Length: 346
Ligand code: SF4
Ligand code: SF4
Image (cartoon, rainbow, N blue to C red):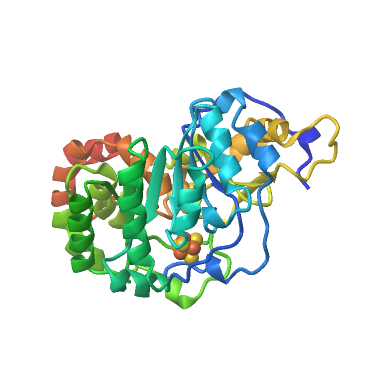
């Protein structure tokens, strides 16, 4: 059990710019790339704890990612959105779009600032990949309805490149996003320990060179995508995203990141419930010397290239400097850009 009295608060931390909350253990999809939908035990993040946490002063500028499982399956999903709107927070409502009525229902009580719909291919190909019949049609309906009725909502589709979709799928989704005049977020699937009931099918992408074929499509201004190839070849930018990204699980576990099953502590397993609310426990845990040490230990980890985590690390790198060296050496294996520069110029 996490013993809050034994933690030692220290003060060398980066602002937490983003946080992901896994509100529910359940999902109503059947994706080939993830096994969360196989979970049958319902566990949920308590709404009251969430309301307390979003008001913590050290999380005042944090952008929240609301997921599950599937966020619309969370029994208090409307209340969670309302709490964020009432507190003036930024967030992304992330959904597979299987339940369009649940999206519409939100607007009877509040609004949605940013709506992100997962779209891994076009038409029936998407439905096959996601194991969800008519999912593409529903996503299209949601986009059209929200754009027609709620211009205050920013809509985007999120495409994840994996071994399960193709260059043509990506082109189709780019054309779809252009036609609908909505944003498109590209991510690259990566192996992660995070999805408990994994099968061999989930062992995707980065073991192959297949994704290189996308290079001409993805090398357009997104540093995370541009650096993917360098990362594949051994470039190891420090993982600082773990210092500025908070991950909360439905059972109160606070995780190191969204790829590894490394738990920093739990905000509900408190020995002293009189003095420590979940919010206070989170404050103490995040700033403890133990957590800081763990984050320092994993700073050299380079085990994933997940967009939700490494995008922030990629942003800190200088692509202009790295590109020529990439061409000279077939692979890169230096901790920082300056290490690399030194090696090349010496
Ligand atoms: S990828 Fe998302 S929608 Fe698909 S099963 Fe996993 S949690 Fe559900
Ligand atoms: S590189 Fe960072 S985000 Fe990825 S698994 Fe390692 S610690 Fe987690």
